Length: 193
Image 1 (cartoon, rainbow, N blue to C red):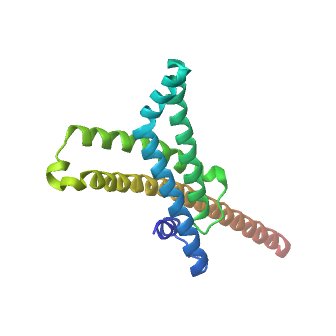
Image 2: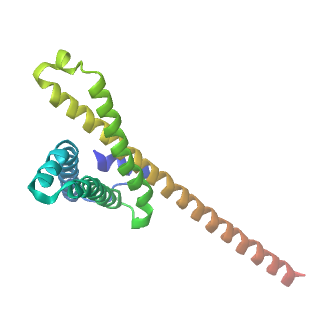
Image 3: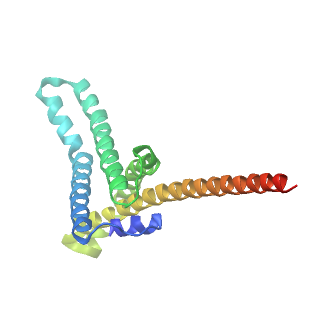
């Protein structure tokens, strides 16, 4: 469904075959799933891992380095997966630098959405009452839903930038064609006189 959304955002036709389309969708579903699990794991269990590293004789400096590096590595991993997703899923030829605005937005939005959702979940502990033993699962599903909105918003940003550039190129081509036509008519008018 992400592929269909990206194709709609770019307002293009899907030129891939059925099996190629399904194959790329499955590959990126697995990559996004791994990214979500890595994000969830490093954010939730990262502090515990850092404390274990510090206890093994590395000291508080190693804990500070771990806390910084886990977010940097996770950010880089998210950005790489999102860049690959934005570059490969639409059936248009896009350069890597053209997908960076949406990938940067998505990476930052991923953290902002996660932070805001964590604040919400921590300050409104009604989930156990409503969902019972499935509260953790319901929270994770809502978090994944928020992350998918952020991913689609980044894709929409890229599509808008792409369409703006395409419109600008078409206008320049039309202008150059009109200019050539005017010059040709002026030349033929001079020859006729």
